[in-house]
Image (cartoon, rainbow, N blue to C red; front, side, top):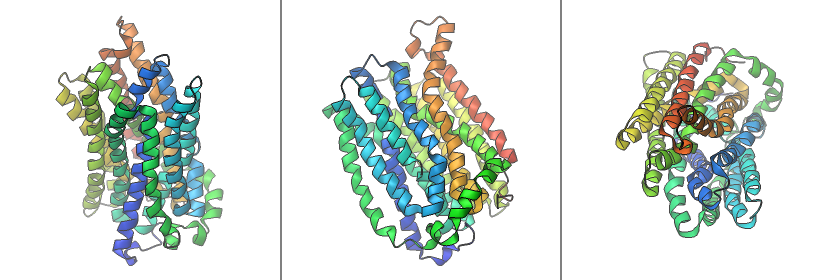
Length: 432
């Protein structure tokens, strides 16, 4: 159980090396997770008959399976430990990330269905990722530094996302989007190698199921986790964060290129800036929690930081959608994603602390709620834009500026709504 193991007794170099590997796995996964959105314009150019909604369903195919498998992924992490589950994630990300491109090669008339199946498989293999990493951080690091460690893992996610857009954009311009994805899958497979030697080097604290009896606990406590007010409130708040992130992750490049009418190369780089901001600000959120915890109680700080940063993220996104000049649009949206990044560490730290022996399962429940919007947001966002454009009589509904402003405003409202659920979250009242 987190807190029962003194991470300071471990060699510090070994602990930080493990954290670097967890961040690497996070970045590789997110690169492949974002690969289809990164080449979405090229895919629609080669298959104009699909349209925005069909592309949105392909985005949602990943999130549907990812979400449905999330609690099982957390349970698996509690049962067999991090090494097995994270190897599962790495292999699946590289193979099925490349399989999306291969599906576009070999299935001409049924390419859409083949891509959807590959994205679904990618979602299933990705499910144990963050429950595994957060549970491992909870066992290896003392409470005051857990938020920073979790934030470092999370900050690698936007790095992978940001890298996907210019790298896959350049590859697809030269070789086509199908070849670009296959090359990326093969190239990132080398990241599996540094994880393999850790099978017998991880101490029991990093794989609690083998030593602490977490297998029985994770099965018997699922009902208690699902009835716990703090776990459920945390999950609802993270659902609002998920909606915010998935709207921007899936549609930001389209927004720059089709709505703001920017050239393809500029839109690719502008899309990367908010992801970079999230990458930089996530560790800052962890450092802020550690700093404030010296003066106030940790439970108070874990609640206050995400409430403030989520509120700021909502306001920045709304300001970006209303701004006229592109530099201001990019700046406001980057600040919004940065604020969202700052609250990620407190979420994952709180989930593990609330779950106790079933920390990964609790994190899985939270992340399930956080990914439900991933099923809805890719489809709902263009639908809201089209509806508002139609109501305003705008014939160019697909790229309507007013419609997309409304869709982003809805995203801001959802994010603000998630702030209030933190009022019912108290890490001093865990499930155990």
